[in-house]
Length: 174
Image (cartoon, rainbow, N blue to C red; front, side, top):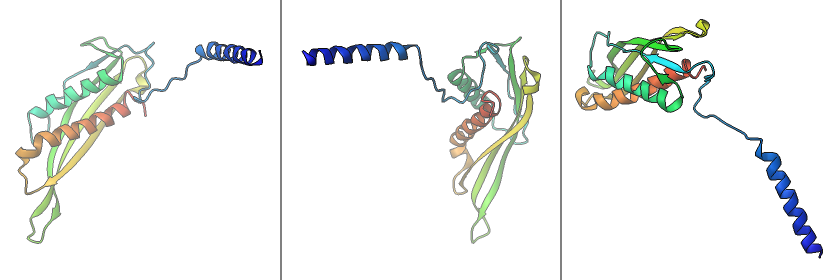
């Protein structure tokens, strides 16, 4: 008899705990966004033309695709062409190669590819959040390799880093 009462008691306690905690949920967001979706619903991402002295034509498309993918993956903002709550425009202002390490024969053994992007972020709902910033990222590669052999991979890696920096500074509100 005591066993039946004990089981019934535990069952009732378990039900009460489940009902009490059912209305309480703990929610964590790991995407780093600080967007109030009651206020911000749309974003207009413009083109980022290449304005650098050295031009690598696929870079513009690679960067724009990476930026749009990050926004769609990490936010619920709808991408529109005009009359948006947020706007992001800019240009690729730098694409430079610089020697980094010099070997015994006075030739570079490492070369650095640096990409710089200027971003104009406009918050049409709260203009004090708007900003105009430059972002740079780089990757080093062995000078024994031809740039044409590593360029696509390096540009992809650099664009991913730049998009993270831009996202954190603008939509992430860090």
